[in-house]
Image 1: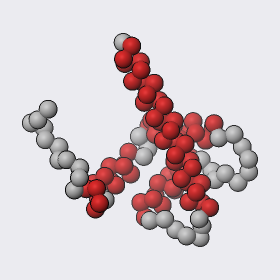
Image 2: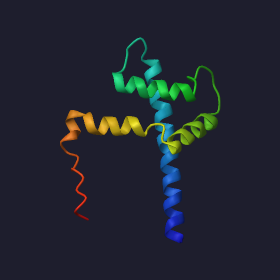
Image 3: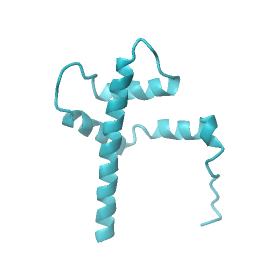
Image 4: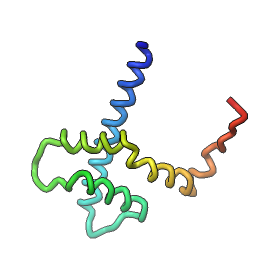
Length: 103
């Protein structure tokens, strides 16, 4: 049971880190306007901004981070990751094919 609890804490920590990364990336993209990101990044940014507004004044980030953690946990960004994984030309050839017959 101890290993399962440790793994749960690792996953929760990873969700926190990903939420912070998404928050920082979205804010960075906002600062680069009027430049526009690529189509898929814009879709992710739009999804983030539906959850968390841009940082226009000083405020504690805890609420924003928690909202993004909930979205990550709910799988909101899974479709973006799956789409990117299967279509990105630089990494698609490096992803091993799923082989249900091997361990």
